[in-house]
Structures are given as structure tokens and as C-alpha cells.
Image (cartoon, rainbow, N blue to C red; front, top):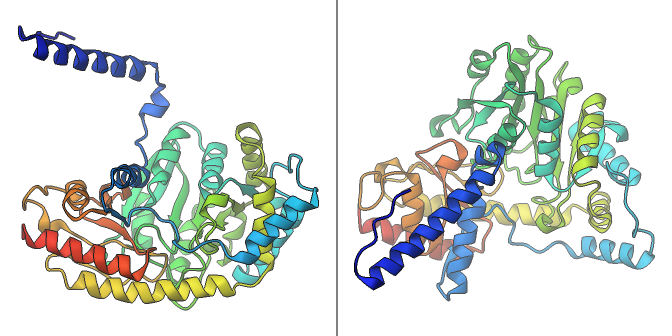
Length: 422
């Protein structure tokens, strides 16, 4: 790298500092593995970090970027963790796949709530659903194996596939069909290299929910390809406004090849406790357990006791949270629908809207969804996430896991900022 230094001492010092920074950056990049270079930073976490930096400087930023409930963990769950602490029983390493009584409770939950027959030995408890999915990909994929990803997708799916040296293959839904890719698209995407399929329902980032009938159509396609594993991410199960939650593992011939992913972060407001789990075919559960044993070992003993309390206790708190989200959904839909140029649908679950904002491309400083989000952060002081991170470059994700007052204020700011350039 060549740097021509200006004769001005001040400018020369400035250029030399830039040269040193760039040199150090390039040196550290050379030290990084190709694996880590192949994946992007999480866009949701990056935007949340920028919002936090601004808040620390005293700037009034409303963050609608993170998928995190704004409710506190219910008191009865906290009490369960406190009792476990005081009991003196949970100070040693737990089993890698989780305490047996917790896995038995999860097995019962799968049967009672989802009509899924996973035995306790088919359950693996992990440090959040993110690790659960990562374990599966690392245990399942060889270099070059393809994974069909329903798009829009949660940001980490593709990164995890790439880390496992797999190849993501995308099939896309759009706002006109509530962002749900079809069975026909699925069949067209299958090749001899297809190893797995992954989707979420209710979906992050769109809030879309696959009906039992739609899942049945997907299952009919997959029956023709018995070696393909289905990964069904159902972490938002308890935040579902469609009337019924359906699991693809209940379809004929699907259970023995379906990994059902769930956890406690969203429905129980336990994001920081980091407890997720899978129900999986026995051979794959053992493989995921083996992977976890070498990477992190078990989930925290006390977090597991909190999870056990949540699962065996009342769902009243979860229901109250879901009802609050339902009210917020109606509020946000009305507010977004009142902004010219924004195309919005009505999500059936989770706590996100995923509006199409392409009409603003080419206006003011906005040329794409990333520019849109940066403009909102700088001009409206509202933190959002670009749809490019979810595989949909015409959209942005907005979380309504915030108070009604914050939602009214933030969307009002968005509207005012867009009026300046529309």
C-alpha cells in the first residue's frame, strides 16, 4: 500500500495515522480464518449496538431493532431460579443435553401442545435456540451440502450454514402472499445436494404463520425426498394470533426427519436466560449433543431450573404478553398504513412488521433499505433493521416489542422524517 504524505505537518500526521489504522486492520484481517470472513456481522446486533452508542451520548433513540420482549421474566419463574440457588443442588455440571426432568417436561410439552412424540433422549437443551440450530447444522452438513432457506429468513440461518460449510439456497415469499414461499418453489429448489430445509413459523422477520394446510403441501413435496431433514423453528409459538399453531412434524412421515426448535426467550420473556431446545430424530439428537459437548457443554444449571419452572407452571403470563402484543400489532398496523409509500401487511404472529419501503428508494439520501434504516437512525432517532439482512432488500424490519407510547412516538418520527423527502 502506497501513501503520499502531504507537506503540511498536520495533514501528514493525519495521513500517517490513517495509514497505521489501515495497516493494522489489514494485518488482523489476514489472521482471520476464511470461515469467519465468509459470514457477516449480525445486522440486528450491529444496529442495536449503534443505537446503544447514541443513547450513551445522550441522544434520544428509540430502538425497534432487537427481537426482545420488553416485559420482565414472570415472577414465578424468577422464584423457581432462586429456590434452585438456595437448594444447593445445582452447583455441578449438568448433563450436556440438559437435566432429565427438564427434558421429560419438554417431551410432555411437545406431546400435549404440539402432538409430537419426542422422547427425552431426543431432546437437547442448549444455550438458546440459536445454538440449537447451529448444533444441528454442524452435526448434519458436509462441505457443499445445500440447505433450502425460506426467505425472508432470520439473519443467522445463512451464517450458520456457511460456518458449517454448507450452501444456502433461497426460495422467496413476498408481501402479496404474506411472505410465504410455496410448495412449488420448494420442489423446484431441491437438487441431489439438498440436505435440509429450514423455515420459521411464526416467522422472524415477517410474523407470517404457516397454516396446517400449507404445511401439508410442503410435506407432500418432502415425502418424495426421504433423506432431506426439515428444521422447523417454532420459537415464537406462544405469540401466534392465527388461532392455532401447527408443526410440520405432525404430518404423516415427517416426525422421524424433522427437527423442531423451540425455547423460552420469546414466549416467556427469558432472552437473557439463554435456554433453547430441539426435539430431533435420535441419531441427530446424539450428534447435536456430541457437538455441544465439545463446544459449550450444558446450559447453565440455574437457567435450566428457571426453564423447568416456566414449562411446568402457569401460561397465564405468556397469554397476557401475547394479548399485549396483539393490541400493539393493531396500533402499529394503523400507524404504518397511514404513511404514504409504505406497503404493509398484517402479520399473524411474533412481534414484527416487515414493510416494503422500495417507493422511497431514490428519494433524498435513500437508495436502498440499509440507507432507509440509517436515515431513520440519524434523522428520526429510531433504530430499525434493513431487510437486506433477511434476504429481502426492499423491506425493513420493525419490532413492536416496545411500549405503546414508544411505538406512537417512533412511528410519528418516521412519518415526519419521510415527509421531508417524499
